[in-house]
Image (tube, rainbow, N blue to C red):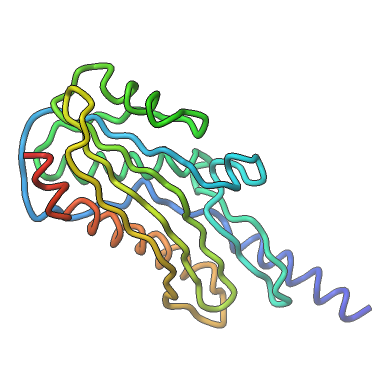
Length: 207
């Protein structure tokens, strides 16, 4: 009976502490600046979203004291791709580009995603493809990621591509790990966005 009560309490604490994570507020620092219009969009191609095992606002797992996982979603309830697209646009805006966000659906194909981005005839377009993004937090969060940034010209030709993928362990703590994970896990995305946007091939494509 005591064990059951402890399990219930651990679950309640986890659910109340997990909350959501904010990705829209992340901003990368570009090492260059420019001008002109750039259409940007994030395209969620995570397999577990495509097969409806997870919802588009899923960002990872938070485990309770017994290791039982619970889904963590975006703080806003919006799709993760929308928040990452906003972060991509905000990063470009700080570097003087006229960035406009285009919403893409997981069901889009590469061709339809590119067509949506180019519909308003921007000078350049950036497509952030999300093939993996998931955190798993018990005490120390682990982040698995596979992100690609593809640059197109106004005619839809690919000018440059940069991909980052891997798995990282980030800072955690024993007490209230979910609270710290809300800061450290989105910070990993900021680092990856930095790497993508500051890649030489992406910088050259935007000039």
